Amino acid sequence: MWETLRNAWKVEELRKKLIYTFLMLVLFRLVGVIPVSGINAAVVKEVAGNYDMLGLVNMMTGNSFSQMTIMAMGITPYINSSIIMQLLTVAIPALERLQKDGGEEGKQKINRITRYVTVALAALQAIGIIAGLQKSGNVLYPAYQNFFGYMTIGVIMAGGTALAMWIGERITKNGIGNGVSLLIFAGIISNLFNGIVLAFTDAVGITHYGTTIWQFLVIIISCLVITTLVTFVDMGERRIPVQYAKRVVGRKAYGGQSTYIPLKVIAVGVLPLIFAYSFMSFPGTIFAFFGTNSGVYKWWSTYMSQSSALYLIVCAVLIILFSYFYTSITFNPREIAENIQKQGGTINGRRPGKVTVDYLQRTSNRLTLFAALFLAVLATVPTLLSVWNNVQIPFAASSILIAVSVAIETVRQVEAQLVMRHYKGFL
Image 1 (cartoon, one colour):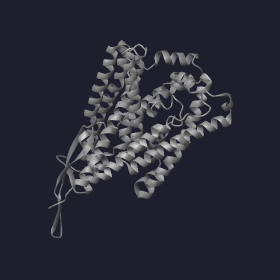
Image 2: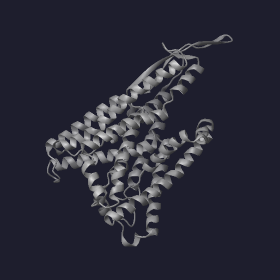
Image 3: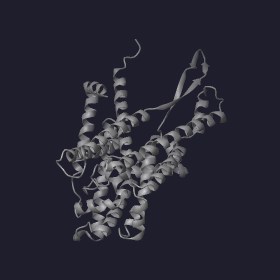
């Protein structure tokens, strides 16, 4: 990776893109310290601990939510709106035709709709969350405890999300890598770095939160092991060999080459984890709105806390179900088989048609099963470490998986840019 970055720095165009990406990430982090007017951040940080769902938002925003800055919602509404639009594209024929047959103009229309949905969703989420927190802990100053106060806060936070979305799109267009993914990556790395630094200062006695040297070593070793394991699995792929027949057109022969279809081992990415975490945290968040002293909230916090065995089992089952669900809407073996057949290709040892479709479906199901089990086990490791010997792990499985995936994909894009610029052609 370091060799790739050194080589990229020597190319002027890539150097400009790297600098541009870095400066935009710095801008994103600097803007993320501007507080939202009317909110008592200290009370929010205290009350937000009652809502598991807000921990996921805080992780994705790099602690901007707990500090109640204008980037408190971060890029999370954009991710949610993108998922919503992806599901609606499958469910609504008009959107499906716009995506498949609309060409570049169709994609731009869908992107425009996604932006509008993002801003509206960010405003609604901000107002809803602040209203819920207000009932639990009086987080608003008196001047903002009215309709216009809520609307002002919603508009400010939606503006922060729109700015984050703009920064991400600028990075994608003028920089290196996917801008939205890099913004999430920056927040996760900031959280991870702050957590490790806090654990270290606690272990050496500078702060006093109860972390020992032994627990700090467990944190470092577990972080390295999980990162290595996730990197190894994330780069894995199943290669399906495809043979294309020769076609003679006039005096020229086309085709005849052998290639393969790469299927990633974790093609579902981190979405099953996010879906499962959001699904499991949603009831607790709703129950907390009725008050932390209510019976239903006490039952949920007792039997469905993040460290309980029932929570881990249900969460693992949801991860497996969401993995198969997401694969079913993103992977179409019939379409792939038809494209191979139209191009005059066949999978080695498989007849075109239903046999090929069944083979692709069976292969996809096996990969999905492995990915689902891997993600389910990975999701429980930080919790088990927290329960064992009371080690407070400053990261989640989803955060490590996101960070590793984004880093690998960014390095691959840099390598692809280097290959294009060093290609000499045929001599």
